Image (cartoon, rainbow, N blue to C red; front, side, top):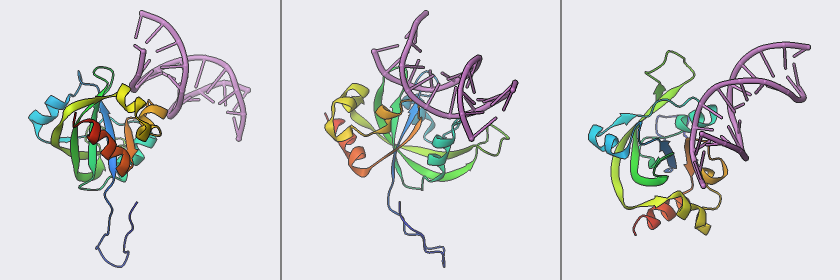
Length: 149
DNA sequence: GCCAACGTTGGC
DNA sequence: GCCAACGTTGGC
């Protein structure tokens, strides 16, 4: 999404939207709030990695609790674009930095997402094992909408 | 705890 | 390049 002007550093970029998964017993939304900022490490899947690589500073990211909770709990934003994953020497893997924006007033469950017509194509449903998922603006806003209670 | 879905690996 | 075996993820 978006396009570059190759003749300068000027970079016109549309906002992109994402959803990332975390198992709350490993790294929860509360841990994230406490840290105030984190690098999103541990991605070891090429498709998810490719998604990390095209994230741009300012992109909005929904924070989803997998395995336990099974719900979207908050919104984050990208504060630093992809760089070498500091937890490995393997050059294939990258992280981005994320900062919390705010919790949803009400968590949005996987069940609700599945039941919402606007969200029928979300990879969260179609590709349940992918841990970094692109969303359209409409999908992102639909989830925020559900999170307003 | 089980199992489906899917990615990766390795033998051929 | 195919495919079986295996490992991992994540929902139930």
